[in-house]
Length: 287
Image 1 (cartoon, rainbow, N blue to C red):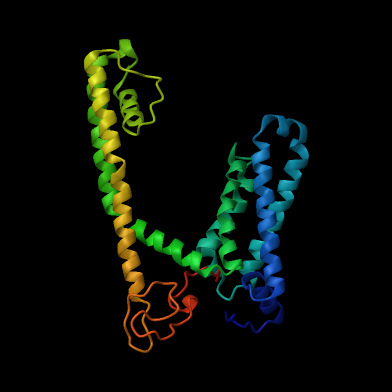
Image 2 (spheres, helix red, strand yellow):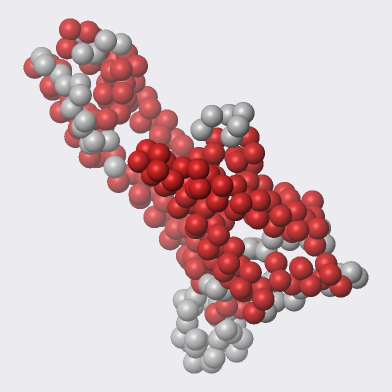
């Protein structure tokens, strides 16, 4: 991967180490960064346990502050050495890097904000760039595109489910009433959501025969609709995979339709291009 050159030697050196992975220093930096992120996350999780917080709260707090300081320096250095600092700041990793350090600074003013540093988990996505797992990136991008293509259908589906739970919640409220625990329509809608998703907490249950009939219909309907979003997303995923195959063309006979991982043309037997070079990889650079 070619890196942009800077007229300033220091900036260029920092850019190669921080944004690049083709050098041993760059790989060591990113792996060390991942270790620091995982350490920070473990500390945040540990601090949420009352016994650990009581016994080791102070040292854990200072370790977390130290790590946040390192992440802050790292973020500022990225802005300094990036050839396009504003583009980096607006990029996915730039926004995540900023959100990863802000909670610690606003925690003194917003109680509980310190636990929002779990946003740092998103930075683990750098492992794809570090290990050059282009295939995994392409697969994850394929799934993401399928979800985006299905968003309207999924929205309509959830809107329909919302209407159904409102109807069933209102019916059960009228039938059962406050004397059986259905004290309001919102609480009855909560019961309908729990029932239609087949969770069934059992904190509110119908007592009358008609109410149990409504509950039975709601549960059966829940089983019926569970497969709907799966089918929608699966169909879109299949369409995306078909489109993806069309990008793999044989340089000899120019026919497409090959599997992404195929090494040879299934029509003429000619060697295909390297799998990692067939499709433009998902942009993971922090530029």
